[in-house]
Amino acid sequence: MSLHKLRAVFKDLNDKSDKAREAALFEIQELKKDLTELQRHLSGRKRETSIVPEDLIRSAYDISYHYRGMQQRQAILAELHEEMEIADAMEYLESRGAKMLQRPAGWHWTSSQDERFLLHEDDAITAAKKLRKLLASGKRRKKTAKKKKALKN
Image (cartoon, rainbow, N blue to C red; front, top):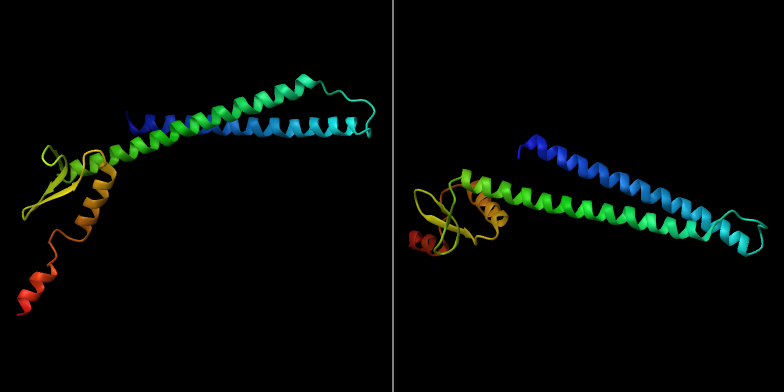
């Protein structure tokens, strides 16, 4: 799927989620007004009311409907973001020469000096972070404390 299409999907889901949130907020405000009017009528401060009990139930149902739709869209967006991060991490690993090997199963990165086991196959995001850190610190391996002591003596 192209990047342009993905942006359109994300934008559409965000827009629909925002519309559902606004509709739920509107229904909440209307329900508050109706409940206030009903309270005034029941406490005797208002003689007549135009509130129908079914209006209250309908408002609560509409709030539930819009809120549920908003939650579902937000869950879909979260899943899409997670999948995009995994795809980006796998693309990064492959572009830097990391390979998925069977023994030990996971991501491996090979340089001219050595081979590094990054992480298990099911966690591409953490493997990409580890490779970024490894490449950022330089491809040279740092000398261990034992080697430093041996060189000083």
